[in-house]
Length: 255
Image 1 (cartoon, rainbow, N blue to C red):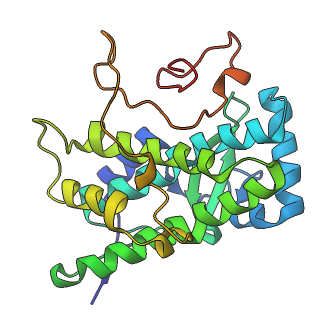
Image 2 (image 1 turned 180 degrees about the vertical axis):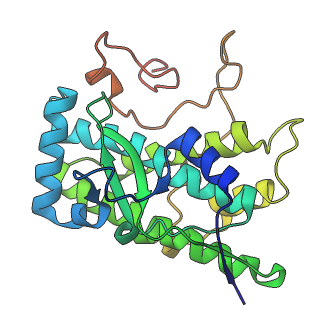
């Protein structure tokens, strides 16, 4: 049977320092937006319009893409890190996540959790536990939000899913270390393999696994970045960059 656990202080400090994940403190912010509110079409539309003004974005489509690059970084990455490195599952469903706004370029400061206890698996039940953690994050949050934003912003879902996928790949390949000569966490290689090749689409709220289609061996390298996987879709970052800067893995640059 799975058991409730607390994230240790040192673990919280790491998750907060690296990705901004923290427990919700009502006294700290009166402008939080619960992620579940953005599942409402009208509220989501208004939110994207406000964010478009902040980013000086020319369209909701481009704003939604930039939103998801940041949103995946502050939701999927810390949850998956905690799952793999700490063997602890946090609740990052849309109902439990509060988006803390920022006046910076991204518009999203960090995510606060209303309920911050973790769940740890018994050794023999880790597969089922892992499924529930993944499903809570993706089918219960990211997948739902992608469906709504794709509709209200007229942005193809593959763009938003690839924005999520590149964050997942980077976490496991660069931070946890599951490739080459690196020695990652005990569950790193197994969890990464499962996420991109084996997890069924239902865990993501999709018919098929939406991450695996974007995974492939690096096809390009440079002196500054010897490990470069070119994206299959463009995220339109150059549309909001002050100097019209492209991502290093942008497919436009390689076309």
